Length: 135
Length: 58
Image 1 (cartoon, each protein chain N blue to C red):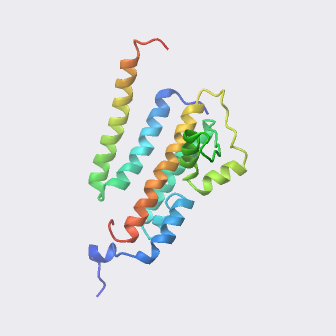
Image 2: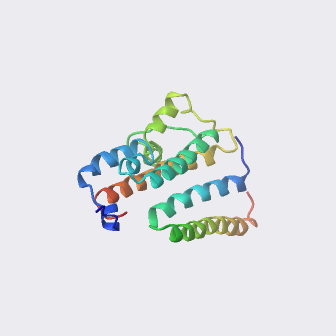
Image 3: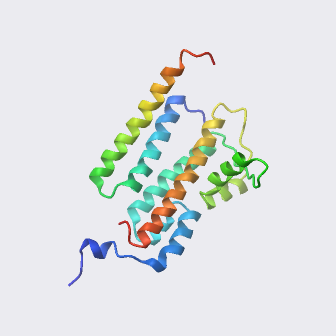
């Protein structure tokens, strides 16, 4: 008889934790899709992807500042990079410069950085799902 | 793309509230409630802070 209890549905897959977190970082929602949480994964992909794309459309700059010379700029870069492949793809497609004179420049920066920060929470959620702490 | 301040606020609040609701609640009913509360809190706090700042010169 097939076991359809909640315990079976949320069964832990600790071995899947590392690949799930890696996939979740590379593409928002991919970790949850890998863990067969399709609905959650698609919503994360749609919502965080939309935040990032809207940020680019609002002339956000995708700066890559690494080092201790300007800590705040480095943290901001890390926040943007946390979205993974979309960040790299956007840079390769020529969106890295942004447009500082645009009226929506700061909004765009906020959208792209928050998209990355939310993706960090999604990575942690994927870990919790993999180890069985969450459904 | 140059949405108005209010449109940007609504877009941002809606998308962030959706992600928060999916992360912080487990079932559909509480997710909906949490998401709507979060969305309303984003809008209300921005409008209140904007109103409080309005007497000050730019």
